[in-house]
Amino acid sequence: MTRTTASRFHAAWVSALLCLIAGAPRAQADDSEVFTSTAFASGYGVCPNILFILDTSGSVNEIVQTYDPPVTYTGPCPTDRVYWRTENSEAPPDCTMTTQWITTSANTCNAATSAFGTNGWWRGRTQQFNPAVNQWQNARAGASAHPFECQADSGVHGPNAASTARWARNHADRRTSNSSQSINWSDRQTLSLYSANYANFWFGAAGAGTLRTR
Image (cartoon, rainbow, N blue to C red; front, side):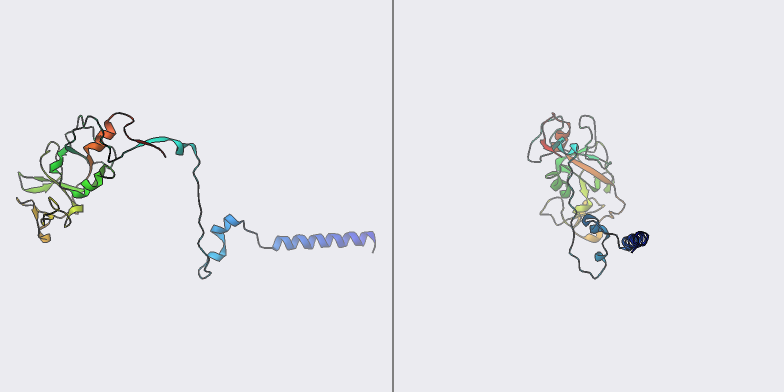
């Protein structure tokens, strides 16, 4: 074989190898295959894959203050009140200025009371009884002694756990044990309610809550 012939043979062999590589299917990295592998088509029976992400950014080490329900917080808010606002917010109204509150005895929404024991606040459809017209209506600032009721308690809880009058009714009796006499909750007001202890946590002395990292 002459030198020229050998060179031509070598060039042809390299060209064939390059064509073979170019025509081969592209290899997938293992982590990419979690998302792109054709084995995930129906019927292949591939075991589930888990993508585990760790957040190591600096913000996770930030110290935050959390509400601890068993702790009694001191602050400017009288402890015999439940505060309310129309906005969907974890921040209660300023208890030193607002008239949007009722006495704890006027709050017959057991769903809210239960939430106070875990989160300190609750949000849901709520109505306040107006004895002047014997109607359940939207909450009224300054009407601190008029009872609150909520949709979450409808058919579940009355003015107390023993009562069978578990439905709010537009009547002087306020409640009924007959579900067909219940008010229609579909277009009623939604409120956020806050316990006084939670309000004192929010507005009380700094450092009163439990300190934890994010």
